[in-house]
Image 1: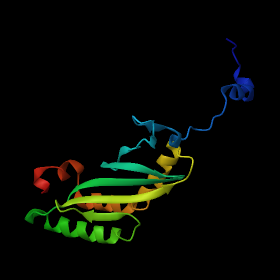
Image 2: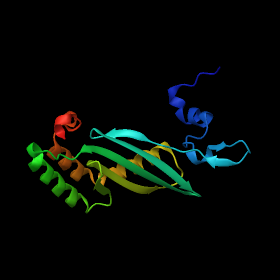
Image 3: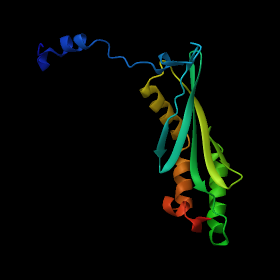
Length: 160
């Protein structure tokens, strides 16, 4: 084995080969009949204490990132009437962003959105797309969380 000094970094990088990231779109799963189909990529992460899940759908060379965040329950008790009004006002204002802000039938606040990812589909492109998407509504999410209160309080029975 040959040691390369750090002063010869250009030669060392040449020996390593290409430093371009591998494109995820190249990895396909084959079914029993030998047909290949893209394997699903489902990112999951927490942003501002809000759990987000998503999917990346590929149609030819175009990749679409879809994210869904579950903020928590909308306050509805008599003790939280003011917080409920403020939360609904914040959600109405957040509707000006490209993200979809809604309250489910179960009174859960949900944020959804999608963005086209540039090729090649790399981990860096996925993270950059998620950041770009979430920053479009970051101010409203911060305000909504401030109106709703502490995350632990949101998920307690008293929040309902």
